Length: 166
Image (cartoon, rainbow, N blue to C red):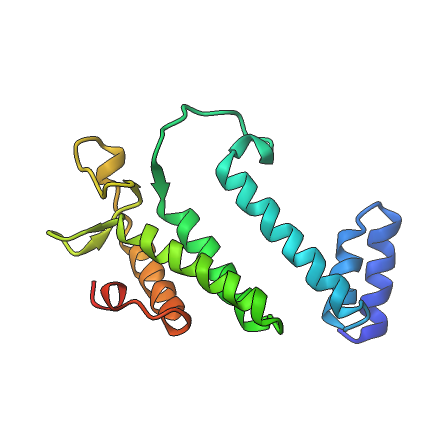
């Protein structure tokens, strides 16, 4: 689509009350100040982490609270976002904070690794994987590969030989 056609489409969407699309178009075409966009992205990242800590923040019903439970999907999403923010950050202070966050996430990812089977399990405890329950035995091959790739990408920013050789 040409820019003018897109704007017409966006205007129609806006008239119907769908303004998020217009915001997206502004960002794509650089019509929004980069600092404003960066602030929105950081705020969204913080909100995302809050939803991971407490799923009711996203409008989902409260489930059973399991202390010390780590979900591989949460680790993967946050490490991927932290790597993106690290790459885009211009402040050394921010870079240090993102590297520290990535380092903690890499340590958390290790708890998902089952050394006997050489796989990443979807759920783990802080003490490591436990196959005593069905939740502890949950394994998704595609997700394991995807997370492995993201962890190796994170190791480019925060080297971790143990992760690199798992």
